[in-house]
Length: 211
Image (tube, rainbow, N blue to C red):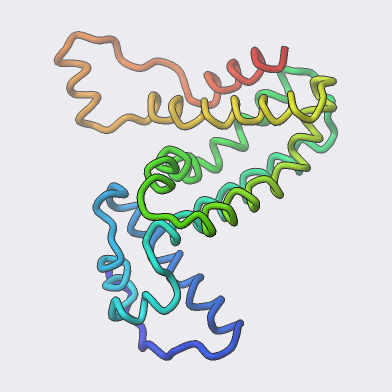
């Protein structure tokens, strides 16, 4: 359903922030409905009820919008992980299950993580990508500190461990939540149905990665 709004150009920083929040909300809603490659600046503007020229006043490309969405959802995931695991070190099984349960609650972020390479390699300036990478690095402190305590490792090893846990999650999520067409094809090919749950499988991976 299209979100129609009367467009009034933002004048203050607060109004500009509100416009960008509305843009991100519209793009996120579209991403719940269709694949990333079917979303354009035109479809985002249409969802907002704006002209494309008005949308371009706040975002130069759709990739810029999706980088902002990735950062927002990544931060929310990391903040909940840091909150729920603040008592680390914990027994590895408890730590792993908590990590997996929090990640499952942020499954929407995993879809953004899955397309991040497509976004970065498409239409992003070096300046914007540097800003995105700097923001990503700034988020890592609390969670790498927790991983250091949990595993008794240094900062470099904690960052490597975090990335390993991050990169595994989208693939596992897709394995347990594949499209109906994929399920039908698997049945037609005589392949077994997917067994188990994402949370259990991911918890097993996290625990094995903790050492």
